[in-house]
Length: 288
Figure 1: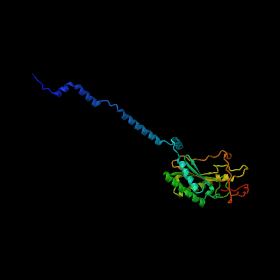
Figure 2: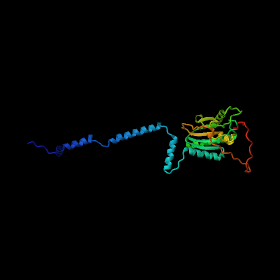
Figure 3: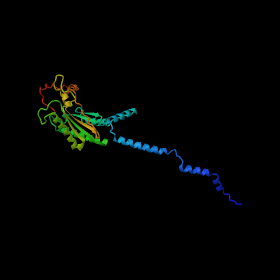
Figure 4: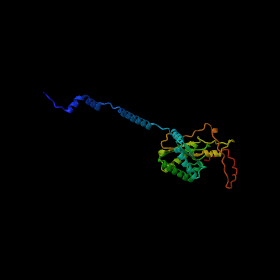
């Protein structure tokens, strides 16, 4: 009689072979339903990188971007001030401190700000050399612009515009208003360069008498001195470094479409009215 020794381990293997096979199969090649997360995360990463690349190559519409920021700030109860508005407030304080409210005006624009000076602050009649007192003010202004650059940690692009009134040039070294306005704008640019500004950040434009802001004649057809004085101006535009366009004043379709300048109001030292001025000559000389 052939007797085999009974083994509990052998008996267990003989009675449960399928169970071991199933465990082996599940451990080696079973399906994991979370595998799709890996592919999904890879796709999201690629899409995110793709849109970041598109955004880096896009050109932002700065005015529209500022309007969106303003709308969001107001929607959530905040107070919004664009960089141009902040810069305009800063320059307005400078104008007030220097006592130039009657000679200068600060205007906030979409791509920066502009400071409009009457030409008489800087230049004598038919001259492109800056007067000593005007040069002192200009140097202080340039210092204020430098300070603003440090506050915003940026560099500005500066555009200088020269404007004259509509009367023709009679005598002097400049044959026309074009040369006179261009020379004055270039002289102001030279002051910026002497104070450390890069020539690549400076632009000089002479408009002559082609961009008046006020109608220069009275109802009687005579020259309006206040309008002439306002049209003779130097405009300093402070633009963002990455500005891609320069705001250009529009030429009027007709001089009659321009607004009338308010009459100049002057008083004497005792508060009375000044004496009546003599009537202007029929062919006045150019007074810049």
